[in-house]
Image 1 (cartoon, rainbow, N blue to C red):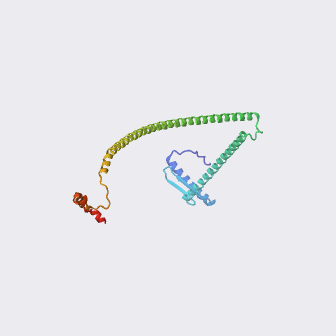
Image 2 (image 1 turned 60 degrees about the vertical axis):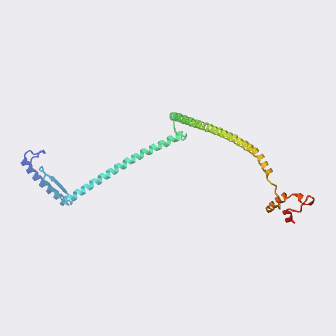
Image 3 (image 1 turned 30 degrees about the vertical axis):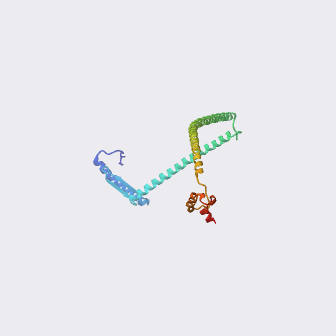
Length: 262
């Protein structure tokens, strides 16, 4: 009588579950050992019981086998991610290349080149596109010209205001200069009148003093050369002597200055 097939489900009986775990754990560890020995394979086995107890087996060491496993998994992920990234970049480059070629073809069509392969409908679309572009360019040109005209008008108003301010300033300076010139002319006229009055006054004083000077000049004695002062008294004494004392009405007295001359 053969063994019946065991139904794979959780064993409800705790004791039976523990017995089954111990038997199958030992068998699994034995099989792992046999596989590593018979096939020269690096085997690592880790088991945790329902109570949290650890059971492990490693033909080359569990830690070493786990490091190798992580290294292989990460390298595989990196290579797969790099491959997918390369493919995505290649697809993106292909799209950009196709778009660039389409833009170049459109530019040549707008310049009037390579129009042979185009159909009538495509040529009509191109014509409408050119008309729309031309209309937009004209509108933009008109807008720029209006803005420039407005800017020139604004500058004109500013310059006109500055011109008016300068004109008012020049008028104010001219009025002050005219007032200063008028005051200066009045001052010069007053000085001229004062100078003329002073000149007339000095002339009158000079005319009044001129007769006195003439009289003084008339009263001044005549300059006599060779008439010494020591003979003045002798001359006066000689003049006082009567001439009739000498015979014939004359005397023998001679002036001292005559004797001195002889």
